[in-house]
Image (cartoon, rainbow, N blue to C red):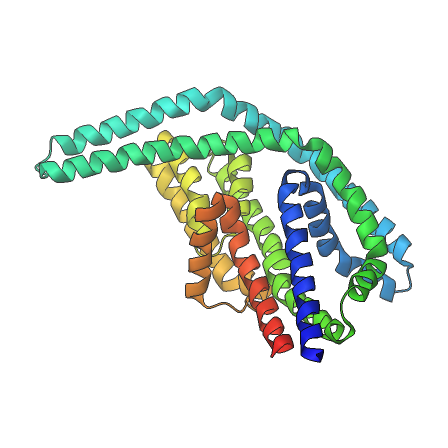
Length: 341
């Protein structure tokens, strides 16, 4: 009888969770302000807790952090936004010329090997590869342009994100207690342990990797600006975002920069490739180990698998989210097995 009650209760909880997940899936297009607010809350909460330990009330600590954040955004934005807008305008103006130069470069390469002694089948294969490369360049440029347009179109949601994060930061303890009271009593301790393990895993993936990405973005933008590569700031921001992807992020982030530099001159492309190689070595040997600390607890083969799986399901966003979601799922499954056994 007791086992039957436990089975019914477990089935009810699982059904409730599945129904909630299905509802969230249905309204997923309107959830981005809440997701960004949760991310902002997660990033700012350690600073708020630190100020609380120093004697601040939680409300004053949040207000103080927000003032600092707002000042940094205003001061940085007043310098950064005009440069970024200048790069965007130049990119939009030069896009037809960039595509024309790309086609000229591919045509030149085709002429070089078509007149060579290569077998016909190999020349056809190279032709197909070059055509595929040209399509990939066009897709990357289109994705960047669409991403910028989508960012502008979601400006209202982005504007309310700090407000949502403020309420989450202020009421987080009450929200946590209410969520715990919804669970069966004997599950609460294990749920707290799950949350702590997830925080431990995500600390490196989210806080650490974002910090590393910002540093990489600054180094790339500065290096490209010094080398006089067009759209240095835009490429640096893109490289920083893509650096979040383990293993392949550095290569994917370097591709647009090397391509743009190659359209200027082969020697500039070599220098840009060397720049990315140096930055990648600095990240791997000094920056990453100092900031990230412990790994996400996944074998490198698992990381690569979830990168490809995420990319296949959701494209670039899937590659960004595949590893952290897999790490969180591993923690949850491990604790669920302990609860059910």
